[in-house]
Image 1: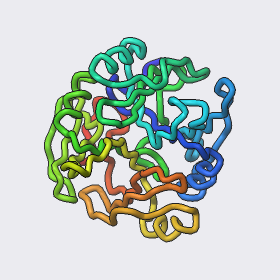
Image 2: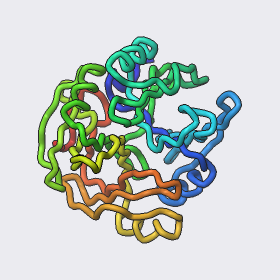
Image 3: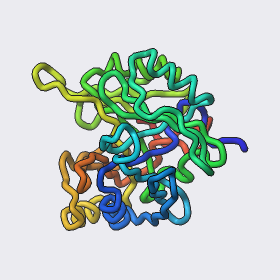
Length: 271
């Protein structure tokens, strides 16, 4: 199998929550997902798809990732998950889920970076990662929101070999794009983190919606909360929201892809 992603790309997203059934109902209604249940050891893993293409997972925090609700976790492709996990720890991270083989998928691990953000490492085998990007209901971007942007960027550069590009964000906060060659992988948004308002870093998952206004209108009735936005960006209007479990994500009415749909192809738009 030739994987459709190169090492260092964000290839999967997973919601780690204490209320997986509630999350299933919310995201099915909001994003149009179809959910199937797969057995993972003693727990159930919810595999979420759009039009038959896998786009995300929902896990039970009681059984995975140190027993805590980590929210949305971005997984990055690696060639050797054991070696990458050791490297992530040596650089100052904390391993919360050691490398574990996932039947009909590959091997995954979960790490907390030195500034509090949960992320994953994934060595794909039969399942390389998400099966579609940028389509309605699917992943289109990953962003690290952090009060330690320079040190956070250095951590992920050391781990994955990224180069960087600095751009203006719609909110006028400093923004760094993590790159693999010409391929944009993820963004790093600098938060106001002056003492004593110290904010832990967090990975934010962006999902494309057909109509942002419609999604925001339905959000309260589904148990979600609109937080920051709407914000006009070069790639479409976006809004940060929280699901019923309090986990943050970003909805964007996408106008052009934030990430290329295949490795080594030029991005549809710059970020």
